[in-house]
Length: 62
Image (tube, rainbow, N blue to C red):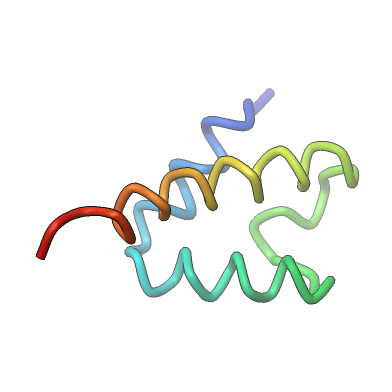
């Protein structure tokens, strides 16, 4: 059985642009193929984790 971290890793391995798109789509309630079999609580946990990860990139010095 895959964990939340496993799903996050699968999405993150596809790059920052993809992660940003996934976050946007999830916030709009669109289905995400990689998360199709998950319940709402697990999807929400994954969304929060992805947002947390991307915040690090948004706050990093250029």
